[in-house]
Length: 219
Image (cartoon, rainbow, N blue to C red; front, top):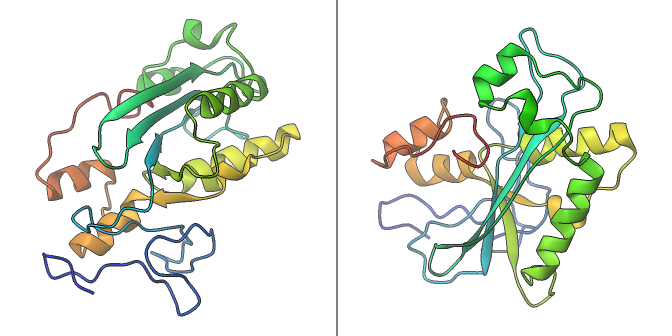
């Protein structure tokens, strides 16, 4: 099936993958050998499977050279209506790091997050509990409501969150185990891989970038 721009709609990875959007974290379609997750069909396709898109973009402790383990310090989610594409609700919390409690100058310069913004903030475990409460309040845990997380790459939900949860001995909620990788979706729709991530996608779609790069809620 072709899109209006002549690109093939990418909702099948293989013969065993159901048509339209898959909710399974199993595709092996990759760029540079990296595995990825689900792909959305183009926005102009009339059928819409998901009621809500949950846009997520973590910020984490960092330095140059990189510190290990990294810890999430900003946890933002935008609830986007799948029909109107309007933001209906926002979840946003800062998280206090425990392994490397002092933010590096590099981290502050990159993310705009200063020490006072994370000092005294809830732990990741507490923030995850708040996320679950927010999901319930927004009706996102209702089995009849179809929602999925959206990230710019696989790092947030394939690497960062499960890695930190494993380190801390915390469970990862099932709703964090499936997501749409915008880079993969863009590459199928536009025919090229966005090497510079969001900046390349904005340029390719003639969109103006709004917000501060590397700010979870602002970008």
